Length: 64
Picture 1 (cartoon, rainbow, N blue to C red):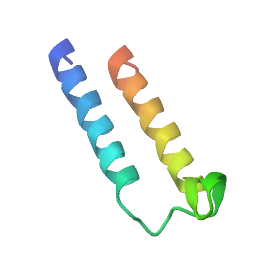
Picture 2 (picture 1 turned 90 degrees about the vertical axis):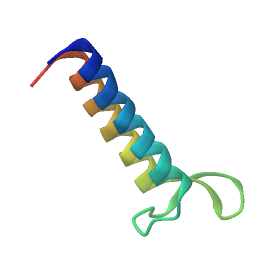
Picture 3 (picture 1 turned 120 degrees about the horizontal axis):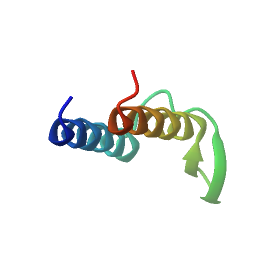
């Protein structure tokens, strides 16, 4: 895969992740870290960030 295509795919993954985190979605789960009551980092948000970071790194490094 070409380098430019790798960056494009990784950028697309990042944009999808940001859109998912910015919106309200049903798989958020309980709050892990909360600054204001009811608002904060949810379990689902942390999982989405972990998975998207792993996939982006795999795409950029060229791992299958």
